[in-house]
Amino acid sequence: MRILLVEDHAPLADSVAQALRATGLTVDVLHDGVAADLALSSEDFTLVVLDVGLPRLDGFEVLARLRERGNRVPVLMLTARAEVKDRVQGLNLGADDYLAKPFELTELEARVKALLRRSVLGGERQQRCGELVYDLATGRFALAGEPLNLTAREQAVLSALIARPGRVMSKEQLASQVFGLDDEVSPDAIEIYIHRLRRKLEASGVRIVTFRGLGYLLEARGE
Image 1 (cartoon, rainbow, N blue to C red):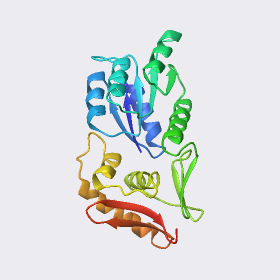
Image 2 (image 1 turned 45 degrees about the vertical axis):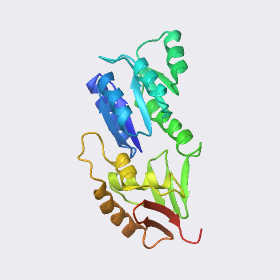
Image 3 (image 1 turned 90 degrees about the vertical axis):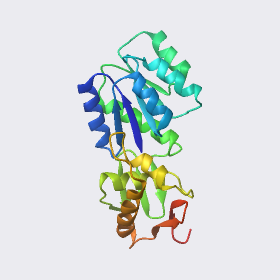
């Protein structure tokens, strides 16, 4: 799952991004509102963490433009403003949650995971496909009750597939969840990660099926 973090205070942005990446999430970091607006109009994200006090374009305007385009991606607003009217403004514009600075990283992680559970997992903590289980709280996969060791990008591919049971995902859709803004995007590289995942799943009842010209589907044999 791919997160966009928009925060102009670089040390804070680095700390938040590091904490979220440690949970298995792909995190892009931007530092101003114009760059955020451009990214949100051209890229797919699972969730946005958006500071209010941004240069060039503030977070309220970024959020307003996002919702005007019909994009319903969950948004967690960050702000140093303590006034109730500012929180109300953000929520009225379509923010899903609000967190005042200063905050503990553990609280931010918990709020991010709660939003992801509601938007991606339908409120559940875990996503299952046969004997494969993804635990959003820990950011880990287990196969037949045993931890499944994955690289960050293998995990990004598998979490995207397991979050969309019964749906075929194209290489382009998977690439949008695996590669960040600073990466050289290569949809063909997805084939490498699919091959590696198949090897790690081959002894189980879970498989990744290829639909030529369309993409990939995760399924449990016999279901």
